[in-house]
Length: 117
Image 1 (tube, rainbow, N blue to C red):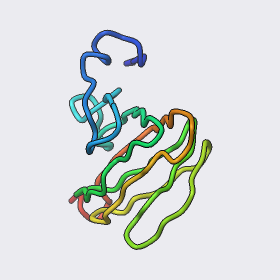
Image 2 (image 1 turned 30 degrees about the vertical axis):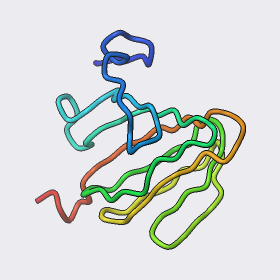
Image 3 (image 1 turned 135 degrees about the vertical axis):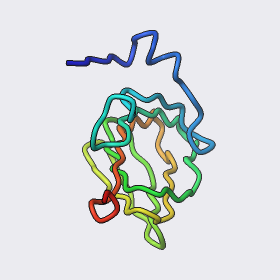
């Protein structure tokens, strides 16, 4: 069993700026995971943006707190705490915190099954 806490030194030592806007850290990555690429937590301050980008894997953003404007491909939708957004492999996506509170996002990524072989 491996347990990681967002406040552990080894987790905090891994803080990085994610796509120009969010401060993020990996809770787990592929050094310990077997089928998932990573599991991360990101903090997006009001007015900040996770810039549009494309990944070679699929992701799920789960909003724990706050709100934002999510862009996936040509679509834009308001999202808020409790929303989970599936981001297909190769699809441009980004998120802007358009609220007055921090937006806290859990992010997980995996290769689609068709690409695992």
